[in-house]
Image (cartoon, rainbow, N blue to C red):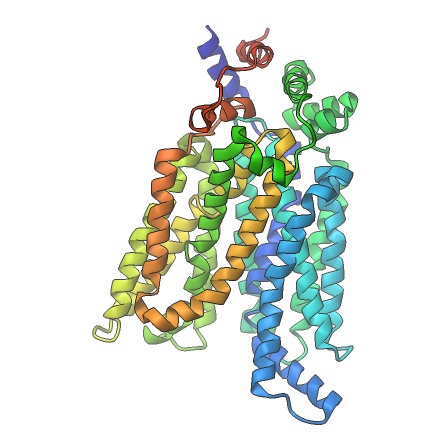
Length: 504
């Protein structure tokens, strides 16, 4: 029977050493660097400002003004997001020329340049080098957060596509955690001049990726549909799937390719105009906006203050902060282990709903924090729960969904749109939250609670489940809401039915 046969096929899919290696080293030199650069600037902040002051005085013979050093520091932090936006905008052009894997490899040049600029800035007495380096590593992150999920989504069998896609989120969290660890006093030494090694470290993951990823295959879907190279696509499928007979996989992609022959090269404008992908586009925009606007980044504004009010010594706060990075990483790993059993939709709804709950509790605890000595501990617990809730689904699934909701011809344009929304929302939170905090004080998190509730409602009513579905099946799931024909392509249906039958 076709239905039981398809279920059998889905259970057969699994992990291979080649697939795990591609996910591990792809993420190590990409999303890991993004996470690392989110946290690594915190520990040496005072030393970087001192470097700015010293350089300014040597150049102009007078101390730098307080307003100028604040402006330079704000630029150093925020230019990372500007670089990310520029990087996201370049992705469709890079992957068209260099492919998915080739773009990841080429992107290591950005990591190396950024490491050199930031590590040598003090030696060259140039704070401009540090700022430009932050822009370049932002460029690296913008490219990585589009090219990597695209690569992972295309190399993984649909049975494990979510788990492989979660490598992106896991390594972002791991990067944040390692940035926190390297910023500890025992490692960082808190001595002027040693902070440059925190930035020189950027080159290490990039070098490791360059040593391994060239020997792993390119995306077989990219090779077959866009390069028309069946021989390399077959070898890539064989390596990733761990079997010799990949004729059904090849035919499935061939059928999809033939079905798309009437579709011209899709641009961003085409995606916005095409009614067939209207709600996929809206869903990606809502998902990516929610990913940034849910308020997790704003949590870090409050963390140190809450810890100090709880009575923790300032010297202990860096170690306590490690618990947030540890919880973040653990929750992302658990999500990767259960995503193929639970599904994308339930994890997103649970994650955003739980965040709304804990934002509400945190607001209550913050308002009573001065009245009860034990209340700050509840605030701390709420922060840990918020981080775990975010990483259980909202922290990684948006990148997976962007690759799953669009077929091959639309995917690069979709990632460009998703990346643009991601980085603009990132920049907006950093820009607006201080004003929100000033106006609302301890009620600032109510804004994020409302956003999380709205995201949960949207996903509950409008997001179809994509777990273990082919890209064709996912497109058909949106057919009704897009008000287009949901009649399946008969050739693709025949291929999928054949693929569902066990072979001797």
